[in-house]
Image (cartoon, rainbow, N blue to C red; front, top):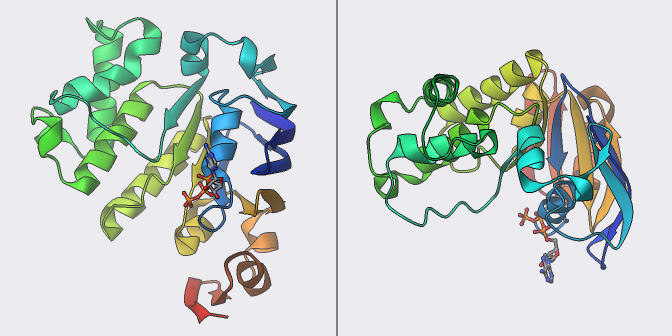
Length: 246
Ligand SMILES: Nc1ncnc2c1ncn2[C@@H]1O[C@H](COP(=O)(O)OP(=O)(O)OP(=O)(O)O)[C@@H](O)[C@H]1O
């Protein structure tokens, strides 16, 4: 569905190759400054490559119009400013713009918006002004906007970072459900335990390089965690516990 080969971007990204297929939940891991957000922006065609190529559904990403790209990929960026005090439901409805419906929603659009609102547990907040939400509520609103697009691919930059434990699991379960339905998801996570529990595959980045790409069983090891993050961790069948700096 999305395939990248040999991506280069200044001295930030070096020869990055990866793919995400339908039905896969892929976690992108790595310490602060490793290049994760930069890599996502290159995959989406939002930054210009210094080398390599990205194809979405077999087409070079640079050749897709913004609307075509938005129909293929929903993007949840790391920083999510709300520029005006719109209602939550209206912000979520922006996710339908690629369908030509940002102004007036048809019944298909309205149903997609309501599904996303329900999935993100926002029913009781749908008529609130978006600028009155808590940080975690706002994060769920932005995820709902991305899900409302109902694009086959979702790229999300730290979608659970500000959520409480229940909503973290709820959002990860939602992403699992999305890929079980045939979608593909590439998701930046800083929580190794959530990554181990929910991801089908892990891509590990360090200093602009992809240093490992494989299943949880293959790559979620104390050795990889120590090398990438510089922390000691205990990895068991029950989960991952970070103990402290190496
Ligand atoms: N426009 C830019 N100009 C100069 N340096 C940049 C630019 N954008 C990013 N960088 C640098 O590139 C590196 C990678 O940044 P990036 O945001 O991709 O990291 P990240 O892995 O997403 O980090 P985090 O986990 O903190 O969000 C950082 O050192 C950052 O300071």
